Length: 146
Image (cartoon, rainbow, N blue to C red; front, side, top):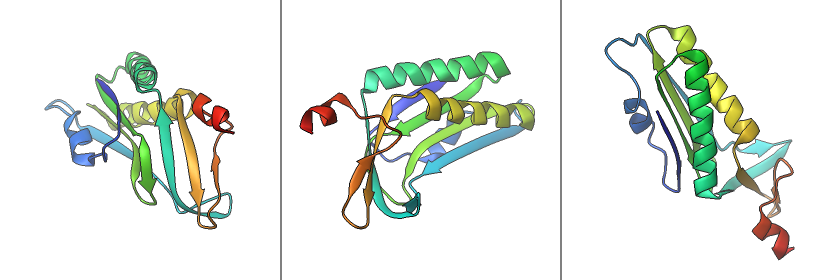
């Protein structure tokens, strides 16, 4: 089990190598990427911010909870922070198990809980030069700067 917050580009091969074993007949990899539009507005990129220790602790809790609930023992998640361009990988989740249903369920549950619970803030940059914080979550430093 691994849960990591990183400022470096996410390597899908490294994420895949964190799971899988000779008894596993299924390996699932989910990659979340920065898309080029949101709510009809062209997007140039995004900045992700997090209090790393808090975010890693919560992501570890998520991975552990899903592992216990699904029985999948090889499960990993990585979330990126910093400036990302369109197409960059922002999050990766991998799961492996003897059977595909368990691996799919585990990977889906992890990403859904990350989206719901992880204290990572998203600042989206638009083609027209505007920018805004998404999901109504603004980090304390940004509130002070207003």
